Image (cartoon, rainbow, N blue to C red; front, side, top):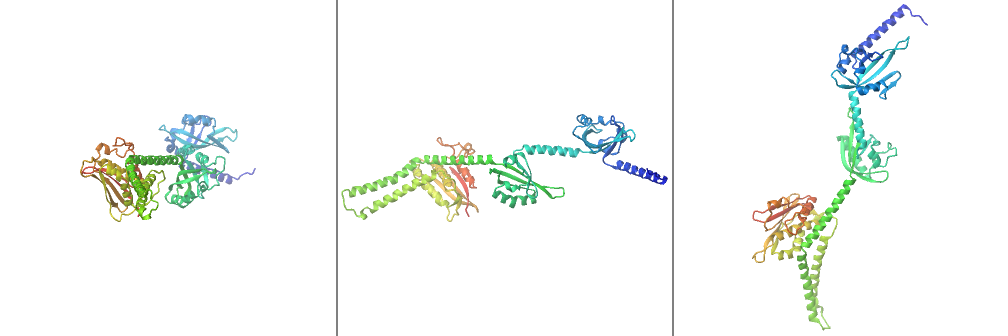
Length: 507
């Protein structure tokens, strides 16, 4: 062994002293708590000034106290038994635990400890510990674990997406719905799980909007590897770092399969109710329609019997002799056919077709349809329709249903006995509501609507008629609102009621 000269020995001692001084200064200035403990009961031999900041004790107060007395009761045994929460690496133990502060509350500390042994006997002389506050990290870890449990238990499809649009993680619901339970999906692009239309939407709008605003929402159709199509309400979120750069995207997709099925059932139910309402309305008009058809049929019989009487036994008949009664019979038969055709169209069950419609023609057709009923009720129906009215948007059958319901109700409300000299009047007015809407009003000369009835007038199954089903007005309002308009009722100051509704123009 090389023998050091006195100068070299003095230099080594100086270096050691300087190093120890620097280490002591670092310990005094460190925000981590540096402490020394006895090996048996872990009493504090020394604690750096950071102990006051972390635990609230002064250095003098904590020296001599046992660390075991400050451990949380649930954590002390873990340390004694070297539980999995205590890790060991190259002579260093790292342990995360709860430690009691001077005021009684607990904080989380992460401590790294090392034993200092006697070089001659190898006995443990003391234990050196460096401790730091891990409360925020532990709380964050717990919050992340709670979020992870929520993430895995939610029924929404959750997808984490890298910047290159490849999938990094799927929750259980997404793996199950997309058929990826046993497949490594990390190389798949997220667009693989969207239909062609969904891909164009999310690439052309979803990702650009999420990059600029942080989020995007829209309805798309997803598809699984099995080929299943899944309608979803998809929310795309952009997640940024502390520096503002986008680190990754996440997708939360709410399965709309049940909702879409329920909407389809509701749509079918409404269609059935609307159809039933038209049948009921036609039933209410049955006697009038029978009279309407009886007139042309009787006229045809009269024309043909006249021909029969005139030319019975006559072998030679000139066309001029029979032209007039035959052409009249043809016109009359066509009129009856038009009535039947209109009845068939009105009661036919079919999907609505929204087109541009001429409102005056539609109104006049419905007034003509109700003509016989109006005559029998001693009511006249008049119109007030301006020239050059713009066309409206709607389904012909649905608008006929609304108009027919309002006109029939007005006729029934205005019904008067034959003894009255003048028939009562039902008036159909049309006016321009504003640049985009037309207003149609049907007024009567009936008794009006009571205050109690007014509040329930458009409720389903409520009717002021003894034999009414209470569906006509409710369905009429629904049909008008589906077309972007409104339907309401008011009482007139001169007596009677007025039902008005608006329609969007087609221009």
